[in-house]
Length: 70
Image (cartoon, rainbow, N blue to C red; front, side):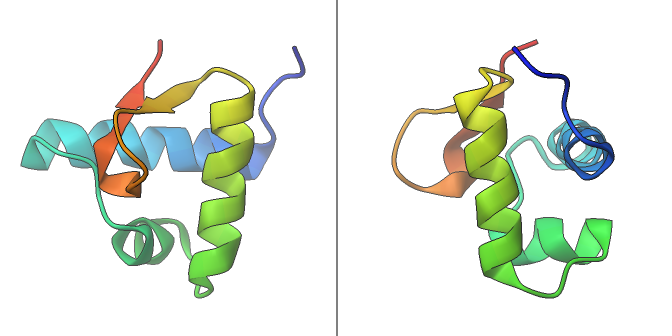
């Protein structure tokens, strides 16, 4: 498994923080705003890469169902 990129590490930190504060994962737009990405497709791409690496998982097709794996 490859190590997450700096951007992916930033996204993981934002996910942890958001879930701790709100009790659920952020939307793609909310996450993008938190990490400075304006394109929802860029955020979704990075989330997909994190999912492929096994660092996050989803309980449904929606990104709000993201769970941190570690």
